[in-house]
Length: 358
Ligand SMILES: *Cc1c(COP(=O)(O)O)cnc(C)c1O
Image 1: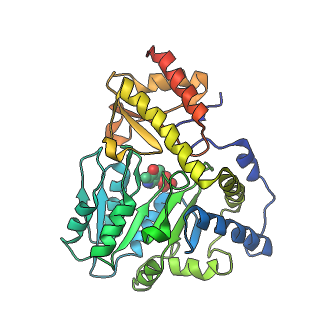
Image 2: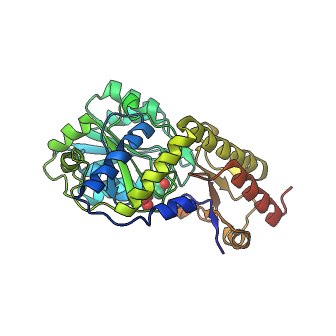
Image 3: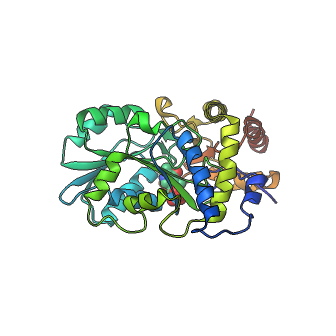
């Protein structure tokens, strides 16, 4: 049976978007492709409130996490990774796996970072880059990236700020230019409500300059090579044309909904789940850091999450278990992408019914 996905990726994809992927194939060096990329890019710039290039990679988000950090740290310098859950920790593992001298600063899971904690940590070493996770999908925490970036910028003007916005871009307002951050990236299967396979990344002038100073910056994700082709509305390697055709359609729909409406809808859906979570469970994230796209509930009733999901499957829905160490101890409801407030009310009603909550 078809299940509506309330999991933090892949998210529910509307039929029209699935259909948009079936358009005939075009040559990626042909005029039709340049027209397509040239049409999509300004819509992505609008989404991110930026004049800077927004690249489209045939990759999951993790690929661009790796690609960006490789280009951010000059020989002899270090990277700082802010860790508040499983996904932010991944950037530490990626950096170490690429031989980049890296330190991490951690907060207790369920909390986010305050600006002064990041600035203080940057004072402890010779850093070229800091990574921040806008929305930590394991704990349901949103970090105040605008405030953190402002504080970092004031204290360390040359440190490049890399932002993982995988579970928030297209669901939460991200003002790339005003925040003065250097790379923000997100894959297609979360708030964009597309199938997996693409990653969108905005890149600042500061980041391009830094990339030029890093000799071993890699090949596939090389921002300077991407920029060269971007100017012709192309990519160095073959793009995922079908997905970009779906992205073109989806961006039209996103802009037709209205960006402010889209942010408000995400918030309203999250508020519903949070209120339900406070009533029947306990919210894992601290109130001041609650995510507008995914809510992590502490499993205070000791339910078997797999059993709940089996019962939900019969009714046409799926939620998510806790991630990693938080499995069974927590469960998550994602309210991302093209889900509606009515969808969320329906889901919560079904769970109430299955578990006899009243
Ligand atoms: C899902 C997720 C990722 C991983 O993205 P992929 O596209 O699967 O590589 C990274 N960071 C966060 C915050 C996520 O939610």
